[in-house]
Image 1 (tube, helix red, strand yellow):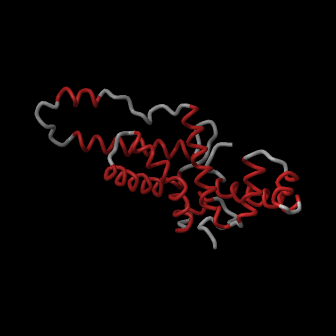
Image 2: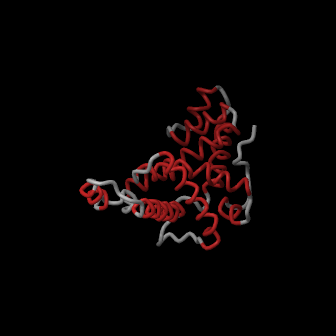
Image 3: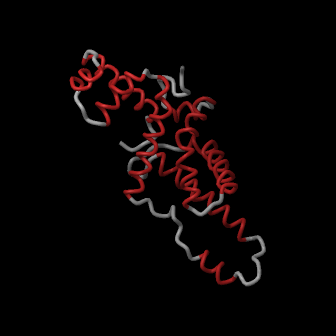
Length: 198
């Protein structure tokens, strides 16, 4: 069974720039949950989140050719976050143009003065986002590997065990463990290439 994250030589971003529909699906599957979380953190309801989600990825499609990863400026995640922030602000500006109910002045003033939850990109939140992206990538590629190979990778890469320890437990050769670990790590790097900070 092949996931949509099959091996490719070019980066996911380059493939998306080249209008590769599979690459676009991968990008949305990988970053969609993060975009939804940011929308919800901004106080959007489910229907509004769906609208902002679509507007965000439309903007990504329009702007991807101009995006260049620059470590000093930020990563793809930071760029995407700025697009979400802009689309959320657009959403609230449109709503503000609608008539406000009577007696809602105090509530409206309060809402206008609430800080934007996406405004600051604090290091802890950036780390959480990074973990979510890597976790999502692992979920998406996992179906392409046997349970034994996945366990070999997981126990070495995530749990920090040695290949020898894992091999003894799984009753396989340590080289099989090393090979599974190497292949899955390489695959993750390919999927995440250009998408997360080093």
